[in-house]
Amino acid sequence: MSPASIAPNVRGDHVASLIFTSGTTGRPKGVMLTHKNLTSMTAKLSSMFQLYKRDGLLSVLPLHHTFEFSAGFLMPLLHGSSITYLEEIDGDNLSRAFKQGNITGMVGVPALWQLLHRRITKRISDRGTVVKRVFDAVVDLIARSATTRRSASISARCSSTPFTGRSAGGCAC
Image 1 (cartoon, rainbow, N blue to C red):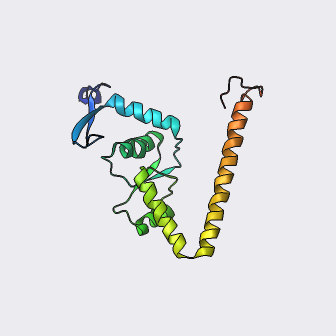
Image 2: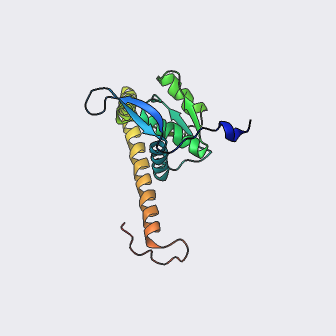
Image 3: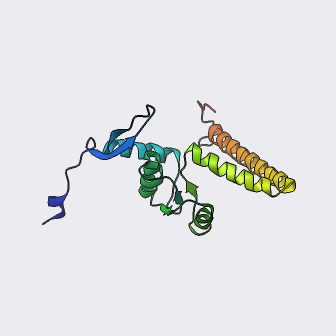
């Protein structure tokens, strides 16, 4: 039997996944996502976030969460990146994953980022005023440095074309 004889006949409009969500109404419902939905979403995410084979993502949200499935599973697979999963999310496991897992990114929702921010802020505050001031100064320095690099990058892209060096014209920056 040839592989072609057992290959499924899958089209973009065929259902690929059925997710259950309460959405904004609070009433649970099943939502059918097609292959085209998933590939379109993954393509759009890939145009917004650069991932490479050398990257490693830490997956902390459940895979039945559409955003995690798309951004934390499908997108890394598309780019050949690695994914690290935790059996349990706690401080020790997170710390171990960051030390051993070649983690270069992490997908999260606002509630996760707020939780991490509160925990980090509390730990820093618990160490005293001097540590908190030093920490705040380092964070400010990093933020300013990132803003400067981003501004320089945008300015360079908007001031000339990569081939001629002449004004790009029409730049909306």
